Image 1: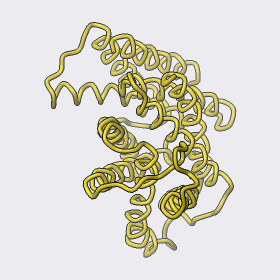
Image 2: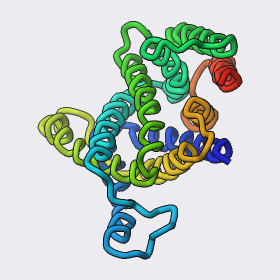
Image 3: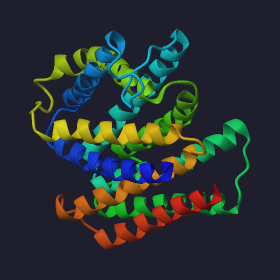
Length: 297
């Protein structure tokens, strides 16, 4: 069951990446991110209110329970990590080809395993080592492909931004499993969104508002709404999958990253990217690496 939910979450996540690229096209990053978070908070607000003031949602899959102060502290930390990851990812997505950014982000399970080795002294089996090495090799080859399009992995700051987003996403994935084991899954998703809103507002007025006339202007478009809808549904299925008995965070994360197929197709049809055959082969290596990690787990 949790694998099926992870697959649907992956497809929705792929759609989220495509609509995010469309929303950010010639658009200001911070206002787009603000509206994405605000719309998400507005989606959850009725469920929070009904859960707190009525008994209508008791026992349903959208009931939002009250949490302890300790749980709120953990969710606030998660919200800060997610928001930082999103800021890096949004800027990278705006300035880099969609296939490149999503391919790099799809290697997040590799960084989760590397973190497990460095922090927890875990040992990898043969499948996992092959998956890690294959994925890292694909990233190195992607850097060579990027040079053909004028993108230097060493000197391009947007490439460093997407790597930062991927590392922060890996940290968030490890934290998710702990939170979902100890806190209601719906509450984690809902309160994370609320805290992200609390954090993004001062950043919006500090980093973007004073310079809004000097940078890319903000333009509203319908893709901004779809970004929120697709991510909300994807995250709901993701948290639900993690909460089920036997769910493995490494496997769920790996399956979820397979949604990179959706932006790859969009990169061909909608964004007319170059070097498609080479990117397809390298993306195939990434997906094989993710599958080997799955087998090893």
